[in-house]
Length: 413
Length: 160
Image 1 (cartoon, one colour):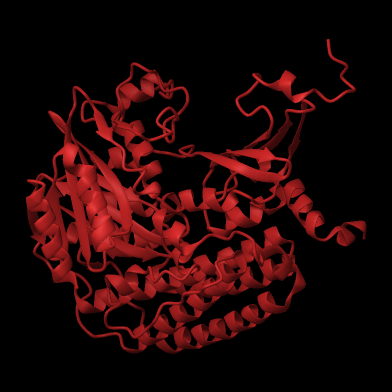
Image 2 (cartoon, one colour; image 1 turned 45 degrees about the horizontal axis):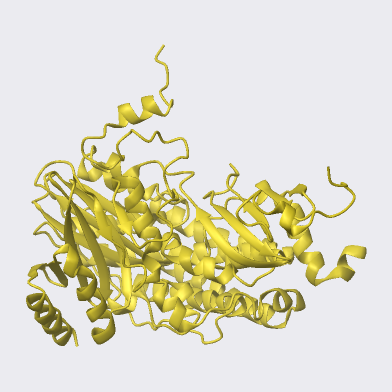
Protein backbone atom coordinates (compact mmCIF):
# COMPACT_ATOMS: atom_id res chain seq x y z
CA UNK A 1 0.00 0.00 0.00
CA UNK A 2 1.30 3.39 -0.91
CA UNK A 3 1.13 6.29 1.49
CA UNK A 4 -1.95 8.35 0.51
CA UNK A 5 -0.28 11.58 1.66
CA UNK A 6 2.50 11.11 -0.89
CA UNK A 7 1.81 11.77 -4.56
CA UNK A 8 1.68 8.59 -6.63
CA UNK A 9 4.67 8.19 -8.90
CA UNK A 10 3.94 8.25 -12.60
CA UNK A 11 5.11 4.68 -13.12
CA UNK A 12 2.58 3.44 -10.59
CA UNK A 13 -0.35 5.20 -12.17
CA UNK A 14 0.66 3.94 -15.62
CA UNK A 15 -1.66 1.28 -16.89
CA UNK A 16 -4.62 2.63 -14.95
CA UNK A 17 -5.65 4.59 -18.00
CA UNK A 18 -4.22 5.21 -21.40
CA UNK A 19 -3.21 8.77 -20.58
CA UNK A 20 -1.18 7.99 -17.48
CA UNK A 21 1.17 10.94 -17.25
CA UNK A 22 -1.41 13.55 -18.11
CA UNK A 23 -4.74 14.61 -16.75
CA UNK A 24 -7.87 13.50 -18.50
CA UNK A 25 -10.74 15.95 -18.20
CA UNK A 26 -14.15 14.72 -19.30
CA UNK A 27 -16.00 17.77 -20.55
CA UNK A 28 -19.75 17.40 -20.89
CA UNK A 29 -22.04 16.02 -22.04
CA UNK A 30 -25.46 17.10 -20.92
CA UNK A 31 -27.34 20.05 -19.58
CA UNK A 32 -31.05 20.25 -20.30
CA UNK A 33 -31.20 24.05 -20.30
CA UNK A 34 -28.68 24.39 -23.12
CA UNK A 35 -28.96 23.67 -26.76
CA UNK A 36 -26.57 21.03 -28.00
CA UNK A 37 -24.85 18.65 -25.57
CA UNK A 38 -21.38 17.75 -26.72
CA UNK A 39 -18.76 15.82 -24.87
CA UNK A 40 -15.03 16.43 -25.12
CA UNK A 41 -12.30 14.38 -23.52
CA UNK A 42 -9.53 16.87 -22.79
CA UNK A 43 -6.09 15.41 -22.21
CA UNK A 44 -3.98 17.82 -20.17
CA UNK A 45 -0.33 18.28 -19.48
CA UNK A 46 -0.34 20.52 -16.44
CA UNK A 47 -2.74 23.28 -17.41
CA UNK A 48 -2.27 22.94 -21.15
CA UNK A 49 -4.57 20.87 -23.36
CA UNK A 50 -2.65 18.48 -25.60
CA UNK A 51 -5.39 16.34 -27.14
CA UNK A 52 -9.16 16.58 -27.55
CA UNK A 53 -11.46 13.70 -28.44
CA UNK A 54 -15.07 14.63 -29.32
CA UNK A 55 -18.21 12.62 -28.71
CA UNK A 56 -21.44 14.09 -30.05
CA UNK A 57 -24.84 12.68 -30.80
CA UNK A 58 -26.49 13.02 -27.39
CA UNK A 59 -29.46 14.70 -28.99
CA UNK A 60 -29.31 12.75 -32.23
CA UNK A 61 -32.97 12.20 -33.10
CA UNK A 62 -32.56 10.33 -36.37
CA UNK A 63 -34.01 13.13 -38.53
CA UNK A 64 -32.48 11.73 -41.73
CA UNK A 65 -34.18 8.39 -41.16
CA UNK A 66 -37.42 10.10 -40.15
CA UNK A 67 -37.35 12.15 -43.36
CA UNK A 68 -37.50 8.96 -45.43
CA UNK A 69 -40.91 8.19 -43.94
CA UNK A 70 -42.55 11.59 -44.24
CA UNK A 71 -43.96 13.53 -47.21
CA UNK A 72 -41.70 16.10 -48.86
CA UNK A 73 -43.62 19.08 -47.48
CA UNK A 74 -43.73 17.79 -43.92
CA UNK A 75 -39.95 17.36 -43.96
CA UNK A 76 -39.48 21.06 -44.59
CA UNK A 77 -41.02 21.94 -41.24
CA UNK A 78 -39.29 19.03 -39.52
CA UNK A 79 -35.86 20.17 -40.69
CA UNK A 80 -36.69 23.68 -39.54
CA UNK A 81 -36.74 22.21 -36.02
CA UNK A 82 -33.09 21.12 -36.35
CA UNK A 83 -31.92 24.32 -34.70
CA UNK A 84 -33.54 26.75 -32.31
CA UNK A 85 -31.48 29.70 -33.52
CA UNK A 86 -30.95 29.41 -37.27
CA UNK A 87 -34.17 27.56 -38.01
CA UNK A 88 -35.16 29.43 -41.18
CA UNK A 89 -32.00 28.70 -43.12
CA UNK A 90 -32.53 24.92 -42.70
CA UNK A 91 -35.93 24.97 -44.37
CA UNK A 92 -34.57 27.38 -46.98
CA UNK A 93 -31.71 25.07 -47.96
CA UNK A 94 -33.81 21.91 -47.94
CA UNK A 95 -36.43 23.77 -49.99
CA UNK A 96 -33.85 24.94 -52.53
CA UNK A 97 -32.52 21.40 -52.95
CA UNK A 98 -36.03 20.04 -53.59
CA UNK A 99 -37.03 22.96 -55.84
CA UNK A 100 -34.02 22.12 -58.02
CA UNK A 101 -35.61 18.74 -58.83
CA UNK A 102 -38.82 20.35 -60.10
CA UNK A 103 -39.46 22.57 -63.12
CA UNK A 104 -40.92 25.43 -61.07
CA UNK A 105 -39.25 28.77 -60.33
CA UNK A 106 -39.46 30.70 -57.08
CA UNK A 107 -41.01 34.18 -57.61
CA UNK A 108 -38.70 37.16 -57.18
CA UNK A 109 -40.67 38.68 -54.32
CA UNK A 110 -40.42 35.42 -52.36
CA UNK A 111 -36.66 35.41 -52.89
CA UNK A 112 -36.42 38.90 -51.39
CA UNK A 113 -38.57 37.95 -48.39
CA UNK A 114 -36.36 34.89 -47.84
CA UNK A 115 -33.29 37.14 -47.88
CA UNK A 116 -34.83 39.53 -45.34
CA UNK A 117 -35.73 36.76 -42.89
CA UNK A 118 -32.38 34.99 -43.34
CA UNK A 119 -30.46 38.19 -42.59
CA UNK A 120 -32.64 39.03 -39.57
CA UNK A 121 -31.85 35.55 -38.31
CA UNK A 122 -28.14 36.27 -38.76
CA UNK A 123 -28.47 39.49 -36.75
CA UNK A 124 -30.23 37.76 -33.88
CA UNK A 125 -27.79 34.83 -33.89
CA UNK A 126 -24.71 37.07 -33.89
CA UNK A 127 -26.14 39.25 -31.11
CA UNK A 128 -26.83 36.14 -29.06
CA UNK A 129 -23.22 35.06 -29.58
CA UNK A 130 -21.70 38.43 -28.64
CA UNK A 131 -23.75 38.38 -25.45
CA UNK A 132 -22.62 34.86 -24.54
CA UNK A 133 -19.04 35.85 -25.24
CA UNK A 134 -19.40 38.71 -22.74
CA UNK A 135 -20.89 36.29 -20.21
CA UNK A 136 -18.07 33.72 -20.45
CA UNK A 137 -15.38 36.38 -20.46
CA UNK A 138 -16.75 37.88 -17.26
CA UNK A 139 -18.32 41.03 -18.71
CA UNK A 140 -21.95 40.63 -17.71
CA UNK A 141 -22.99 44.16 -18.70
CA UNK A 142 -22.29 43.42 -22.36
CA UNK A 143 -24.47 40.31 -22.13
CA UNK A 144 -27.41 42.34 -20.75
CA UNK A 145 -27.12 45.14 -23.29
CA UNK A 146 -26.71 42.87 -26.29
CA UNK A 147 -29.60 40.60 -25.38
CA UNK A 148 -31.82 43.66 -24.92
CA UNK A 149 -30.96 44.77 -28.46
CA UNK A 150 -31.64 41.26 -29.74
CA UNK A 151 -35.29 41.73 -28.75
CA UNK A 152 -35.59 44.42 -31.43
CA UNK A 153 -34.88 42.03 -34.26
CA UNK A 154 -36.92 39.22 -32.68
CA UNK A 155 -39.92 41.57 -32.49
CA UNK A 156 -39.53 42.38 -36.18
CA UNK A 157 -39.34 38.68 -37.08
CA UNK A 158 -42.48 38.10 -35.02
CA UNK A 159 -44.30 40.95 -36.75
CA UNK A 160 -43.48 39.48 -40.17
CA UNK A 161 -43.87 35.75 -39.56
CA UNK A 162 -45.94 35.48 -36.40
CA UNK A 163 -43.20 33.61 -34.52
CA UNK A 164 -39.91 34.51 -32.89
CA UNK A 165 -37.88 31.37 -33.54
CA UNK A 166 -39.61 28.70 -35.64
CA UNK A 167 -40.94 30.98 -38.32
CA UNK A 168 -42.35 28.35 -40.72
CA UNK A 169 -42.13 30.99 -43.44
CA UNK A 170 -40.87 28.77 -46.23
CA UNK A 171 -42.85 26.73 -48.68
CA UNK A 172 -41.63 24.99 -51.84
CA UNK A 173 -41.11 27.68 -54.50
CA UNK A 174 -42.14 30.56 -52.29
CA UNK A 175 -42.98 31.77 -48.82
CA UNK A 176 -46.19 31.26 -46.87
CA UNK A 177 -46.73 34.83 -45.66
CA UNK A 178 -46.34 38.15 -47.41
CA UNK A 179 -44.63 41.14 -45.78
CA UNK A 180 -47.20 43.08 -43.72
CA UNK A 181 -48.23 46.49 -45.07
CA UNK A 182 -46.40 49.55 -43.80
CA UNK A 183 -43.50 47.71 -42.15
CA UNK A 184 -40.83 49.30 -44.34
CA UNK A 185 -40.13 52.48 -42.35
CA UNK A 186 -40.16 50.65 -39.04
CA UNK A 187 -37.66 48.02 -40.27
CA UNK A 188 -35.29 50.62 -41.77
CA UNK A 189 -35.37 52.73 -38.63
CA UNK A 190 -34.75 49.73 -36.34
CA UNK A 191 -31.89 48.52 -38.56
CA UNK A 192 -30.31 51.96 -38.33
CA UNK A 193 -30.48 51.73 -34.56
CA UNK A 194 -28.88 48.25 -34.59
CA UNK A 195 -26.00 49.52 -36.76
CA UNK A 196 -25.40 52.30 -34.20
CA UNK A 197 -25.38 49.77 -31.38
CA UNK A 198 -23.02 47.44 -33.28
CA UNK A 199 -20.59 50.31 -33.81
CA UNK A 200 -20.76 51.09 -30.11
CA UNK A 201 -20.07 47.44 -29.18
CA UNK A 202 -17.10 47.44 -31.56
CA UNK A 203 -15.71 50.38 -29.61
CA UNK A 204 -16.31 48.53 -26.32
CA UNK A 205 -14.58 45.29 -27.33
CA UNK A 206 -11.62 47.32 -28.57
CA UNK A 207 -11.16 49.32 -25.37
CA UNK A 208 -12.60 47.30 -22.49
CA UNK A 209 -9.81 45.60 -20.58
CA UNK A 210 -11.85 42.49 -19.69
CA UNK A 211 -12.59 41.67 -23.30
CA UNK A 212 -9.09 42.42 -24.55
CA UNK A 213 -7.44 40.31 -21.86
CA UNK A 214 -9.68 37.30 -22.44
CA UNK A 215 -9.82 37.33 -26.23
CA UNK A 216 -6.65 38.77 -27.74
CA UNK A 217 -4.24 36.09 -28.93
CA UNK A 218 -6.59 33.30 -27.77
CA UNK A 219 -7.74 30.58 -30.14
CA UNK A 220 -5.23 31.08 -32.92
CA UNK A 221 -5.09 28.99 -36.04
CA UNK A 222 -3.32 29.44 -39.37
CA UNK A 223 -5.31 30.04 -42.55
CA UNK A 224 -3.71 27.01 -44.16
CA UNK A 225 -4.78 24.65 -41.38
CA UNK A 226 -8.30 26.12 -41.20
CA UNK A 227 -8.66 25.51 -44.94
CA UNK A 228 -7.42 21.92 -44.62
CA UNK A 229 -9.88 21.26 -41.80
CA UNK A 230 -12.70 22.57 -44.05
CA UNK A 231 -13.71 25.37 -41.66
CA UNK A 232 -16.82 27.27 -42.71
CA UNK A 233 -18.43 30.64 -42.04
CA UNK A 234 -16.88 33.07 -39.55
CA UNK A 235 -14.32 30.41 -38.55
CA UNK A 236 -12.89 30.58 -42.07
CA UNK A 237 -13.30 34.34 -42.51
CA UNK A 238 -11.48 35.30 -39.30
CA UNK A 239 -8.23 33.95 -40.73
CA UNK A 240 -8.74 35.74 -44.04
CA UNK A 241 -10.38 33.07 -46.23
CA UNK A 242 -13.08 34.53 -48.48
CA UNK A 243 -15.49 31.71 -47.75
CA UNK A 244 -19.11 32.86 -47.91
CA UNK A 245 -21.78 31.06 -49.91
CA UNK A 246 -23.78 34.31 -50.27
CA UNK A 247 -20.93 35.63 -52.39
CA UNK A 248 -19.40 32.54 -54.00
CA UNK A 249 -22.68 30.85 -54.97
CA UNK A 250 -25.53 33.37 -54.50
CA UNK A 251 -28.96 31.99 -53.66
CA UNK A 252 -32.30 33.71 -52.84
CA UNK A 253 -31.87 37.40 -53.78
CA UNK A 254 -28.20 37.80 -52.84
CA UNK A 255 -27.16 38.37 -56.47
CA UNK A 256 -29.43 41.43 -56.59
CA UNK A 257 -28.42 43.00 -53.28
CA UNK A 258 -25.15 44.98 -53.12
CA UNK A 259 -22.97 43.83 -50.23
CA UNK A 260 -19.46 42.68 -49.46
CA UNK A 261 -18.36 40.10 -46.94
CA UNK A 262 -16.03 40.90 -44.04
CA UNK A 263 -12.77 39.07 -43.45
CA UNK A 264 -10.03 39.60 -40.88
CA UNK A 265 -6.42 38.62 -40.70
CA UNK A 266 -5.55 38.26 -36.99
CA UNK A 267 -7.22 34.90 -36.42
CA UNK A 268 -7.96 35.12 -32.69
CA UNK A 269 -11.15 35.33 -30.65
CA UNK A 270 -10.95 39.12 -30.58
CA UNK A 271 -10.96 39.14 -34.38
CA UNK A 272 -14.04 36.91 -34.29
CA UNK A 273 -15.83 39.40 -32.05
CA UNK A 274 -15.16 42.27 -34.43
CA UNK A 275 -15.89 40.12 -37.46
CA UNK A 276 -19.31 39.11 -36.19
CA UNK A 277 -20.16 42.70 -35.23
CA UNK A 278 -19.11 43.85 -38.72
CA UNK A 279 -21.20 41.09 -40.28
CA UNK A 280 -24.13 42.28 -38.22
CA UNK A 281 -23.80 45.74 -39.80
CA UNK A 282 -23.62 44.18 -43.29
CA UNK A 283 -26.73 42.10 -42.52
CA UNK A 284 -28.65 45.15 -41.26
CA UNK A 285 -27.79 47.00 -44.47
CA UNK A 286 -28.94 44.05 -46.60
CA UNK A 287 -32.28 44.00 -44.74
CA UNK A 288 -32.76 47.76 -45.23
CA UNK A 289 -31.93 47.51 -48.94
CA UNK A 290 -34.17 44.50 -49.49
CA UNK A 291 -37.26 46.00 -47.84
CA UNK A 292 -36.82 49.22 -49.81
CA UNK A 293 -36.42 47.38 -53.11
CA UNK A 294 -38.99 44.64 -52.50
CA UNK A 295 -40.46 43.76 -55.95
CA UNK A 296 -44.18 43.36 -56.53
CA UNK A 297 -45.68 40.06 -57.58
CA UNK A 298 -46.78 36.66 -56.31
CA UNK A 299 -45.07 35.13 -53.28
CA UNK A 300 -45.59 31.48 -54.09
CA UNK A 301 -46.03 28.92 -56.82
CA UNK A 302 -47.97 25.81 -55.84
CA UNK A 303 -46.21 22.59 -56.77
CA UNK A 304 -47.54 19.01 -56.82
CA UNK A 305 -46.73 16.79 -53.81
CA UNK A 306 -44.82 14.27 -55.95
CA UNK A 307 -41.24 15.32 -56.68
CA UNK A 308 -39.62 13.98 -59.90
CA UNK A 309 -36.82 11.41 -59.57
CA UNK A 310 -33.26 12.66 -59.34
CA UNK A 311 -30.69 13.90 -56.91
CA UNK A 312 -29.72 17.44 -56.03
CA UNK A 313 -27.87 19.41 -53.40
CA UNK A 314 -28.06 22.94 -52.08
CA UNK A 315 -26.02 25.00 -49.68
CA UNK A 316 -26.45 28.37 -48.04
CA UNK A 317 -24.72 30.60 -45.53
CA UNK A 318 -26.21 30.22 -42.06
CA UNK A 319 -25.00 32.51 -39.25
CA UNK A 320 -22.46 29.81 -38.28
CA UNK A 321 -21.34 28.90 -41.79
CA UNK A 322 -22.30 26.69 -44.68
CA UNK A 323 -25.39 24.50 -44.34
CA UNK A 324 -25.52 21.67 -46.83
CA UNK A 325 -28.49 19.53 -47.91
CA UNK A 326 -28.48 16.62 -50.33
CA UNK A 327 -31.77 15.09 -51.46
CA UNK A 328 -32.48 12.02 -53.56
CA UNK A 329 -35.91 11.28 -54.98
CA UNK A 330 -37.19 8.14 -56.66
CA UNK A 331 -40.27 9.96 -57.90
CA UNK A 332 -42.51 9.27 -54.94
CA UNK A 333 -44.27 11.19 -52.22
CA UNK A 334 -41.41 10.69 -49.75
CA UNK A 335 -37.68 11.26 -50.24
CA UNK A 336 -35.31 8.38 -50.83
CA UNK A 337 -32.55 10.03 -48.81
CA UNK A 338 -32.00 13.43 -47.24
CA UNK A 339 -28.59 14.37 -45.91
CA UNK A 340 -28.18 17.49 -43.83
CA UNK A 341 -24.88 18.86 -42.58
CA UNK A 342 -24.79 21.67 -40.04
CA UNK A 343 -21.96 24.19 -39.69
CA UNK A 344 -21.02 23.15 -36.14
CA UNK A 345 -20.20 19.68 -37.47
CA UNK A 346 -17.93 21.22 -40.11
CA UNK A 347 -16.24 23.50 -37.57
CA UNK A 348 -15.69 20.84 -34.93
CA UNK A 349 -12.28 19.67 -36.27
CA UNK A 350 -11.17 23.32 -36.21
CA UNK A 351 -12.42 23.75 -32.64
CA UNK A 352 -10.47 20.67 -31.54
CA UNK A 353 -7.35 22.16 -33.09
CA UNK A 354 -8.01 25.55 -31.42
CA UNK A 355 -8.26 23.96 -27.99
CA UNK A 356 -4.83 22.36 -28.22
CA UNK A 357 -2.30 24.49 -26.36
CA UNK A 358 -4.92 26.46 -24.46
CA UNK A 359 -5.47 26.34 -20.68
CA UNK A 360 -8.61 25.10 -18.91
CA UNK A 361 -9.39 28.75 -18.13
CA UNK A 362 -9.72 29.43 -21.85
CA UNK A 363 -11.98 26.45 -22.66
CA UNK A 364 -15.29 28.33 -22.26
CA UNK A 365 -14.10 31.26 -24.36
CA UNK A 366 -12.54 29.14 -27.12
CA UNK A 367 -15.48 26.74 -27.36
CA UNK A 368 -17.96 29.61 -27.42
CA UNK A 369 -15.82 31.25 -30.10
CA UNK A 370 -16.89 28.74 -32.76
CA UNK A 371 -20.49 29.51 -31.76
CA UNK A 372 -21.49 25.93 -31.15
CA UNK A 373 -24.70 25.05 -29.53
CA UNK A 374 -22.88 24.78 -26.22
CA UNK A 375 -24.29 22.30 -23.86
CA UNK A 376 -22.02 20.87 -21.27
CA UNK A 377 -20.63 23.32 -18.77
CA UNK A 378 -22.48 22.07 -15.72
CA UNK A 379 -21.19 18.54 -15.86
CA UNK A 380 -17.41 18.85 -15.73
CA UNK A 381 -15.47 16.52 -13.52
CA UNK A 382 -11.71 16.63 -13.05
CA UNK A 383 -9.45 13.69 -12.41
CA UNK A 384 -5.85 14.27 -11.45
CA UNK A 385 -4.17 10.95 -12.16
CA UNK A 386 -0.96 11.85 -10.36
CA UNK A 387 -2.65 12.33 -6.99
CA UNK A 388 -5.86 10.40 -7.66
CA UNK A 389 -7.83 13.47 -6.74
CA UNK A 390 -11.20 13.85 -8.36
CA UNK A 391 -13.42 16.87 -8.18
CA UNK A 392 -16.21 18.46 -10.16
CA UNK A 393 -17.04 21.97 -11.15
CA UNK A 394 -20.28 23.45 -12.28
CA UNK A 395 -20.33 25.75 -15.29
CA UNK A 396 -20.49 28.76 -12.99
CA UNK A 397 -17.43 27.57 -11.02
CA UNK A 398 -15.52 27.08 -14.26
CA UNK A 399 -16.49 30.58 -15.36
CA UNK A 400 -15.32 32.00 -12.03
CA UNK A 401 -12.08 30.03 -12.34
CA UNK A 402 -11.51 31.49 -15.81
CA UNK A 403 -12.08 35.02 -14.54
CA UNK A 404 -9.86 34.58 -11.47
CA UNK A 405 -7.12 33.10 -13.66
CA UNK A 406 -6.93 36.34 -15.60
CA UNK A 407 -8.06 38.91 -13.03
CA UNK A 408 -7.07 37.63 -9.55
CA UNK A 409 -7.60 41.05 -7.94
CA UNK A 410 -11.32 40.97 -8.80
CA UNK A 411 -11.90 37.84 -6.81
CA UNK A 412 -10.55 39.48 -3.64
CA UNK A 413 -13.23 42.13 -3.71
CA UNK B 1 -12.86 29.89 -64.35
CA UNK B 2 -15.68 27.55 -63.88
CA UNK B 3 -15.47 26.09 -67.42
CA UNK B 4 -11.72 25.51 -67.05
CA UNK B 5 -12.32 23.70 -63.78
CA UNK B 6 -15.04 21.50 -65.27
CA UNK B 7 -12.87 20.73 -68.32
CA UNK B 8 -10.10 19.55 -66.04
CA UNK B 9 -12.49 17.48 -63.94
CA UNK B 10 -13.71 15.85 -67.14
CA UNK B 11 -10.14 15.16 -68.26
CA UNK B 12 -9.18 13.49 -64.97
CA UNK B 13 -12.45 11.58 -64.95
CA UNK B 14 -11.81 10.04 -68.37
CA UNK B 15 -8.24 9.22 -67.32
CA UNK B 16 -9.62 7.35 -64.31
CA UNK B 17 -12.35 5.65 -66.37
CA UNK B 18 -15.01 7.48 -64.39
CA UNK B 19 -18.45 8.44 -65.69
CA UNK B 20 -19.30 12.14 -65.56
CA UNK B 21 -22.79 13.64 -65.74
CA UNK B 22 -24.26 17.11 -65.28
CA UNK B 23 -27.75 16.60 -63.82
CA UNK B 24 -28.44 20.36 -63.75
CA UNK B 25 -26.70 23.72 -63.82
CA UNK B 26 -23.88 23.96 -61.30
CA UNK B 27 -24.03 20.27 -60.38
CA UNK B 28 -21.49 17.73 -61.59
CA UNK B 29 -21.62 14.04 -60.66
CA UNK B 30 -18.55 11.87 -61.15
CA UNK B 31 -18.71 8.15 -60.46
CA UNK B 32 -15.28 6.75 -59.65
CA UNK B 33 -14.14 3.24 -58.88
CA UNK B 34 -13.21 2.77 -55.21
CA UNK B 35 -9.51 2.05 -55.91
CA UNK B 36 -9.14 5.14 -58.13
CA UNK B 37 -10.97 7.48 -55.74
CA UNK B 38 -8.07 8.72 -53.66
CA UNK B 39 -5.87 9.44 -56.67
CA UNK B 40 -8.71 11.34 -58.35
CA UNK B 41 -9.45 13.50 -55.29
CA UNK B 42 -5.81 14.25 -54.47
CA UNK B 43 -5.22 15.29 -58.08
CA UNK B 44 -8.11 17.77 -57.87
CA UNK B 45 -6.74 19.10 -54.60
CA UNK B 46 -3.17 19.48 -55.81
CA UNK B 47 -3.82 20.80 -59.30
CA UNK B 48 -7.21 22.51 -59.17
CA UNK B 49 -7.01 23.99 -55.64
CA UNK B 50 -10.19 22.17 -54.66
CA UNK B 51 -10.46 22.78 -50.92
CA UNK B 52 -13.96 22.81 -49.48
CA UNK B 53 -15.28 19.34 -48.74
CA UNK B 54 -18.86 20.14 -47.75
CA UNK B 55 -19.71 16.73 -46.44
CA UNK B 56 -19.80 13.01 -47.22
CA UNK B 57 -23.14 11.27 -47.75
CA UNK B 58 -23.73 7.57 -47.35
CA UNK B 59 -26.58 5.95 -49.28
CA UNK B 60 -28.20 2.54 -49.12
CA UNK B 61 -28.59 1.47 -52.76
CA UNK B 62 -29.81 -2.09 -52.26
CA UNK B 63 -26.87 -4.30 -53.32
CA UNK B 64 -24.32 -1.55 -52.73
CA UNK B 65 -23.60 1.32 -50.42
CA UNK B 66 -22.95 4.59 -52.20
CA UNK B 67 -20.59 7.16 -50.74
CA UNK B 68 -20.76 10.68 -52.17
CA UNK B 69 -18.09 13.29 -51.47
CA UNK B 70 -19.56 16.77 -51.99
CA UNK B 71 -17.08 19.51 -52.90
CA UNK B 72 -17.88 23.21 -53.28
CA UNK B 73 -15.90 25.14 -55.87
CA UNK B 74 -17.33 28.61 -56.44
CA UNK B 75 -20.67 28.19 -58.20
CA UNK B 76 -20.03 24.52 -58.90
CA UNK B 77 -20.83 21.61 -56.65
CA UNK B 78 -18.86 18.50 -57.47
CA UNK B 79 -20.22 15.17 -56.27
CA UNK B 80 -17.72 12.33 -56.36
CA UNK B 81 -19.57 9.06 -55.99
CA UNK B 82 -18.17 5.62 -55.31
CA UNK B 83 -19.85 2.28 -54.69
CA UNK B 84 -18.86 -0.44 -52.25
CA UNK B 85 -20.54 -3.83 -51.86
CA UNK B 86 -22.82 -4.23 -48.87
CA UNK B 87 -21.37 -7.64 -48.11
CA UNK B 88 -17.92 -6.15 -47.54
CA UNK B 89 -18.42 -2.53 -46.44
CA UNK B 90 -14.84 -1.28 -46.39
CA UNK B 91 -13.83 2.00 -47.99
CA UNK B 92 -10.57 3.89 -48.21
CA UNK B 93 -10.25 6.89 -45.89
CA UNK B 94 -9.30 10.32 -47.26
CA UNK B 95 -8.35 11.77 -43.86
CA UNK B 96 -4.66 11.95 -44.83
CA UNK B 97 -5.41 14.25 -47.77
CA UNK B 98 -8.40 16.09 -46.25
CA UNK B 99 -8.11 16.14 -42.41
CA UNK B 100 -11.55 17.77 -42.17
CA UNK B 101 -13.18 14.53 -43.38
CA UNK B 102 -12.58 12.67 -40.12
CA UNK B 103 -15.97 13.29 -38.50
CA UNK B 104 -17.94 12.71 -41.71
CA UNK B 105 -16.33 9.29 -42.08
CA UNK B 106 -17.12 8.48 -38.45
CA UNK B 107 -20.73 9.48 -39.09
CA UNK B 108 -21.06 7.08 -42.04
CA UNK B 109 -19.36 4.38 -39.97
CA UNK B 110 -22.04 4.83 -37.30
CA UNK B 111 -25.00 5.21 -39.62
CA UNK B 112 -24.26 2.64 -42.36
CA UNK B 113 -21.57 0.43 -40.87
CA UNK B 114 -18.88 1.30 -43.43
CA UNK B 115 -15.32 0.93 -42.15
CA UNK B 116 -12.87 3.48 -43.51
CA UNK B 117 -9.38 1.99 -43.53
CA UNK B 118 -6.88 4.66 -42.50
CA UNK B 119 -9.18 6.70 -40.27
CA UNK B 120 -7.59 6.76 -36.78
CA UNK B 121 -10.91 7.12 -34.92
CA UNK B 122 -12.76 4.17 -36.49
CA UNK B 123 -12.90 2.43 -33.10
CA UNK B 124 -14.88 5.27 -31.53
CA UNK B 125 -18.57 6.04 -31.74
CA UNK B 126 -19.62 9.53 -32.74
CA UNK B 127 -23.42 9.60 -32.94
CA UNK B 128 -24.84 6.27 -31.85
CA UNK B 129 -25.39 5.61 -28.13
CA UNK B 130 -22.81 3.58 -26.22
CA UNK B 131 -25.52 1.04 -25.51
CA UNK B 132 -26.10 0.29 -29.21
CA UNK B 133 -26.15 -3.54 -29.48
CA UNK B 134 -23.39 -4.99 -31.66
CA UNK B 135 -25.77 -7.29 -33.55
CA UNK B 136 -28.28 -4.56 -34.40
CA UNK B 137 -27.80 -3.40 -38.03
CA UNK B 138 -26.80 0.25 -38.58
CA UNK B 139 -29.85 2.55 -38.47
CA UNK B 140 -29.72 4.19 -41.91
CA UNK B 141 -29.88 0.91 -43.85
CA UNK B 142 -33.26 0.60 -45.56
CA UNK B 143 -33.82 -2.72 -43.79
CA UNK B 144 -33.55 -1.16 -40.31
CA UNK B 145 -36.92 -0.33 -38.86
CA UNK B 146 -37.29 2.43 -36.23
CA UNK B 147 -39.72 0.30 -34.17
CA UNK B 148 -37.13 -2.47 -33.93
CA UNK B 149 -34.40 0.02 -32.90
CA UNK B 150 -36.64 1.52 -30.22
CA UNK B 151 -37.49 -1.94 -28.88
CA UNK B 152 -33.86 -3.09 -28.72
CA UNK B 153 -32.67 0.13 -27.08
CA UNK B 154 -35.47 -0.06 -24.51
CA UNK B 155 -37.03 3.20 -25.66
CA UNK B 156 -40.48 1.81 -26.35
CA UNK B 157 -43.28 3.60 -24.55
CA UNK B 158 -45.89 1.25 -23.17
CA UNK B 159 -49.34 1.80 -24.60
CA UNK B 160 -52.14 2.16 -22.10
